[in-house]
Figure 1 (cartoon, rainbow, N blue to C red):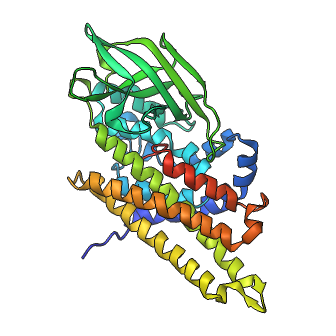
Figure 2 (cartoon, rainbow, N blue to C red; figure 1 turned 180 degrees about the vertical axis):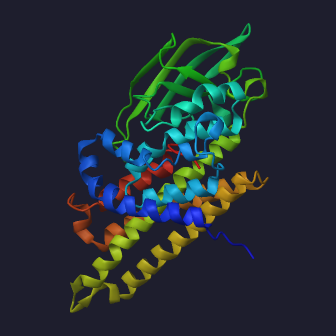
Figure 3 (cartoon, one colour; figure 1 turned 30 degrees about the vertical axis):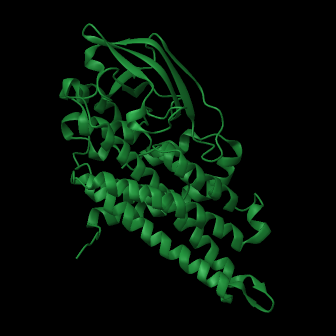
Amino acid sequence: MITFELNEEQTMIRDSLKGFAAEVLAPAARAIDESGEMPAAVIRQGWDFGLIAASIPEAYGGGGGERSCMTNAVALEALGGGCASQTVAIMAPGQFVGALLDFGTEAQKAEHLPRFTGTEPVAAAVAIQESQFGFAAGAQRTTATRKGNGWVLNGEKRLIPLGDRADTFLVLASEPGAAGAVSAFFVPRETAGLTVSAETGTQGLKPVPKAKILLEGVELPGSARLGGDAGFDAARLVNQARVGAAAVAVGLSRQATDFAIPYAKERVAFGEPIGKKQSIAFMLADMHIECESMRWMVWKAASLLEHNDPGAAKAAVLAQDYVRRKAVKIADDALQIFGGHGFIRDLPLEMWLRNARTLTVLDGPVSV
């Protein structure tokens, strides 16, 4: 029998974050979306939960907890049920930390991890997305060429969450002539040849600070390569990012479903609540079923990733594909239940639809 019953710690984290999402994130979501700016106070409040620091070993000043893809998936869904944009802004640095914990050398961990254990938020960004090929790990057009004991990076990265303020970028790049090998490199913001600029707007997740970077002859020492000579598993990092984005989308879908149900019970048309009409009742039932189905697929993929199971890559792709199709449909169905009112900006429905679409095409803003 397959079960994903949460342990006591995971249940406590989920319940705490759901409360925070409902009481803090959700009420502020529309105003933040309208302004297009992410308040620093939001990131600080989310940072206070210590979700990122908890998985950092005590030797580096962290909480010493075990890194868990499942726990991260639970946390991302809970927060995503309040506001997808604020969730991404709060949790984006966790992708940088996760890559260090999974693949970093001892020297790299000692250099970077202690920065994430304090009380003030730290912005560090993982740069994967490209204009030409999006998120495909093996199709990176940014290149890393050997030069003596070091490397030279050239290329462009787009849509980097918190890239506008990041002090360090973890940049994925292909190695020419290395049979499709992909490496990742720590690039400090002040490195010569690195240009950081504001990213153009996106349909959804508008308040999430995003940047693009141009790398022109960026020279780095050999120690800048994640994992040193051993390198890292690019496919694993990409799959973690896919599942992370899917987990946030599950939270958003649950939020849209929970918002539509009371309205369907109260809105009267032709003498009875519209929720009693078969077409609406079946739509709501399908929305609920799909939320549960998406959750189980995301949790399965997260669990397999956590245990380094060979089937993790397949599970991550299947979860991503399913969530991509169903999350947008749920957001759209919720909007349709409200009819024309769904497009009025006083309500969050059109915002959820935009965010759902962006989450399902913009891979990798967060990871499990």
